[in-house]
Amino acid sequence: MAAAIQVHGLRKAYGATEAVAGISFEVVEGECFALLGPNGAGKTTTLEILEGYRDRSGGSVEVLGVDPAQGGRDLRERIGIVLQSAGIDRELTVGEVVALFGGYYPHPRDPGEVIELVGLGEKRQARCRTLSGGQQRRLDLALGIVGDPDLIFLDEPTTGFDPSARRRSWELIDSLRALGKTILLTTHYMDEAQNLADRVAILAAGRIVAEGSPASLGGRDVAEAEISFRLPAGAGLADLPPLGPARPRLDDGRVMLRTEAPTGALHALTGWALARGDELEGLAVTRPSLEDVYLRLTGGDR
Amino acid sequence: MSTQTRTGSRPATGPLLLRQVRHQNKLFLRNPFSAFFSLAFPLMFLLLLGSLNAGQTLEARGGIPYIQFLTPGLLAFAVVSTCYTGLVTGVAMNRDMGILKRVRGTPLPASVYVAARILSSVWFSVVSAVLMVGVGVALFDVEVVWRMLPAAVGTLLLGAACFCALGMAVAALVPNGEAAPAVANFTVLPVVFISDLFFPMDAAPAWLRALGSVFPVKHFALALEATFNPLVTGSGWSWGHLAVVALWGLAGVLVAVRKFQWEPRSPGGSRRRRRR
Image 1 (tube, rainbow over the protein chains, first blue to last red):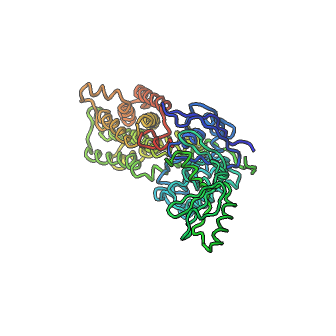
Image 2 (cartoon, rainbow over the protein chains, first blue to last red; image 1 turned 180 degrees about the vertical axis):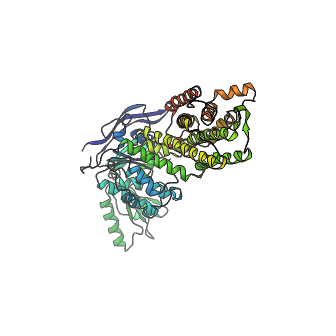
Image 3 (cartoon, one colour; image 1 turned 90 degrees about the vertical axis):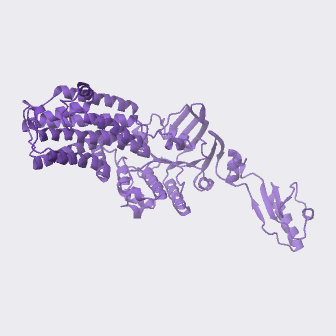
């Protein structure tokens, strides 16, 4: 697979502050890659350098084989950009603005079809000023894809959406991937990255602190599992069976147990409970969520 | 990238420009303010001042009817409102809204976008001129001096181009959209009143006349007024005035090309949000 985006040692300084402090990553063709991080981490700065809006202080960048700082009309014909905030002529109708923008590209998609895709079919004749915030965001998405681009940049595409609109946009983004499009998105929603992205890079203070698939990020897949359950009435911690090297602790009536071998521990525990005729209420086996990893890596848990 | 075959080719510049001009025209007509200030406002002045001074003659201009002076003066005013004021406020506000930034991210060439905005402004200058001369002829017996019509049209177009260039230049310099109307009006209104536009400045103090002569509005107005003055001989071109207008226009082009911004730059605007 060829790389659609290559970033090596990218830096961007605003005066004395480094918004992006030397990051490197690659997005291969057909992949959905997410930059995840808190506000001010450098996500949008990185994206806008790749989109050609901003120059860089250092490092090298290639988008579809060209340097976006030099990329002219040829490059812009092949990329679709959904900015975090971009205005629209308020007195145009949805249909007019999508058709207008489609006309800028060599092989646009059908405007009516695109409007249906983003769920604005009923708003086709409506003036843009009458759209709600979420509807305007969907129009942003429509304008980003009407040119049928190979590569799509999405800067926080679903911020401010209600849950069903988000779900719809996720389906749309998934359908773009099915068409072979490459997608680079920024988000600060963990579930968005988890649902959409093949790979995620977590950005904090201008640096990539972790990179990988959502399932393996930050060692989630190999981290210790946590077993927890409510201690049966009349039992104490000392009554529990031997659980290997793991040492259980009691927290507000719940037993918490971290272990690298949850299978054996569970076997011992359930056997013990059955022999006593007890039910292990609230029994759960969990691994650190993407959110736990994110908070740990971005320092948000302090 | 994707293996699907692509049909279609890059849109040709001519049709692209035409579509973009139509788009700007549509926006112009749907915006009550732009339509009012470019079309209705100068027309209102014509009706008001024309009625108030019906039958008056201008001794300062060899005794021609006042309306032969007022009509071209108001044409100049309409051009300045449409091209200069309209572009300063329109472009600065669109920049603040992020409309320019969005366009910049598409394959539409910047030159086509800017040309379309200018052509649309010139188009409505012409519409306004035709409207006003039509009303002047119908209601106030304005005489169109046909032998000077080419000069009138040429002067109007050159003036429109100059004030579009100045409009783009000032739009590039104003800090944000909120300041734009104030800056536009503050630069236009005082100048308009010392530019032989509503009334001749012959009796005004010399320093005021000299001040008026610095700015392009007066030269534009005088050049247009000459083309409606039946006493003027020849084809009606005022080359001296037009040269001053052209110089200002050129200065406008230079500033606009160097300073033009596609993104908002007000600290309270999207700059803060952009660094995420």
